Length: 104
Image 1 (tube, rainbow, N blue to C red):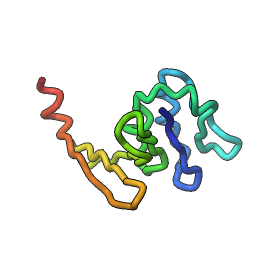
Image 2 (image 1 turned 30 degrees about the vertical axis):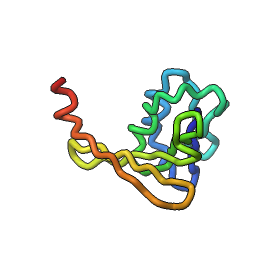
Image 3 (image 1 turned 60 degrees about the horizontal axis):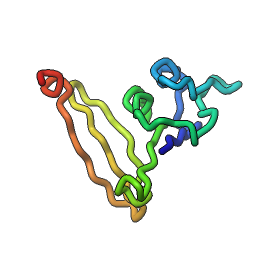
Image 4 (image 1 turned 90 degrees about the vertical axis):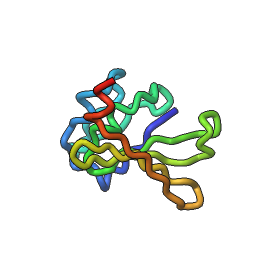
C-alpha cells in the first residue's frame, strides 16, 4: 500500500503532514510535501482525505482488487467523493455524505 504525491499539484498547506499517524510525510525545501518511505505507508488514507488540491493519490494494487487503479478524494460541502481512476483511464466515483455517515 502506498500513496503518491504530485509535487506540481501540492500547495504546501501541510494538512496532510499534520494527520499522518506514521509521520511519513515531510516538507521539502520548496515547502511542498513528499513521503519519506512509500513502503512504510499504512494505507490509512488520512492524508488523502485532507488534500484539497488532489495532489495525493492512493495506489490500489492487485492485492486489494484495484488492479493498479489510483484513488483520490474531492470534498463538496458534506459530500466526500472517492474517485477511482482505472489503468485504462476510466473513472468511477463513490460519494459519501459525511454528515449522514457520522449518524451511525
